[in-house]
Length: 446
Image 1: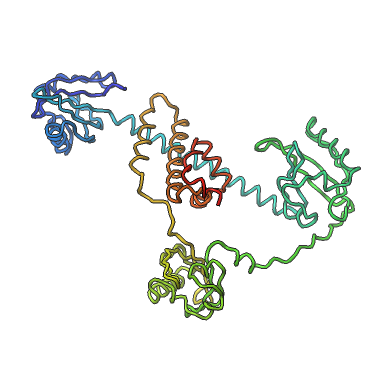
Image 2 (image 1 turned 60 degrees about the horizontal axis):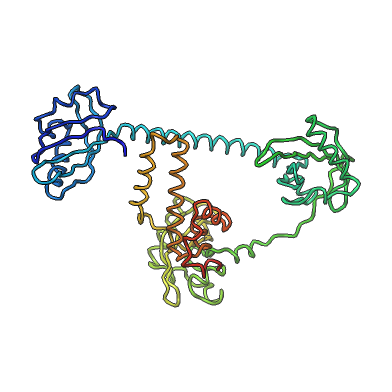
């Protein structure tokens, strides 16, 4: 255990009898405090805190930790955290103090590091956005291939329109057999010398002729090839025909409730999730009914929703409750937008069930205590490791809270945390929490 920065031996009235200082404040002359009341050595209005610590130690044996500004004989003031313990009988009290200056500096460094990391993150996002704009805007078909498997990592819109390529395909299987060896020889030459002449490939369903050029690029987790494709005859090939996409199919399969209403709140369109929310079996039973029929405050909620929609053009996270036909009440957040700016004739609503959320305050004390323990290690831990440990503690805390909330259902916990199921399992393995939800093992595969 680290040595306290200040140790005071007090009588039962809080008068200093003996002083011990650590190396950090050893230049101070603590003996000048002997015979003085502890309260007289505290700056500003900290005397009241000192009196409470002395009184608590006398009556209960130990006081809570309190922060005060300690004024030393030289005039130096340091933020200190003290606790006071009764020694027994009439032996008096002992006050143990820790210098908070190092903790404050560490917290400042942590905040500065977080801000620097955030700035780096946004710089990377800006670079990625520029790359994406250039990649997507190019009229030339461009592919990114993994250097080991020659699998398509990315295909720009021009390549998708002309050849129908999708991520994950093996490019060698998309070309004629006699083109594969020359293509691989070109890639090997690019690996060795950085450049190579283009080669002729026959790609796509119609096996049109293309001139392919390759560039070796560094990537994550390994190297990549950027393949630029130009029609060999100089004529752009026809676009790949695609089946028309119906938005109705997506709306009906949305996990959140969806509805379209008119200015009077009359329902014109819903999806399956909305019917489940209001506990109605068929869409015909809700069409041409007013949405206010199922709201917790039918008149007030719609009036406020429309007023905000007119003022801001859209509404996000509008909280209300839905009363189902069978008596179930569900807390929801509504996002809404009109078909035009201003007075819209039709309004689309997305109603999200928020009845199952992670508690905001439960476990906060234990999390703060764990973070404080990490900060205590500042003298022997690098800042990078400190940030990593702090992030790990927070992630572990909320993973545990999510599993407890859904009684061990890992799929539901992953959904609450916004993680994929695979990503959630990786987190469990990373923090050695695989056995955390053993009690809910019978429902984890739901």
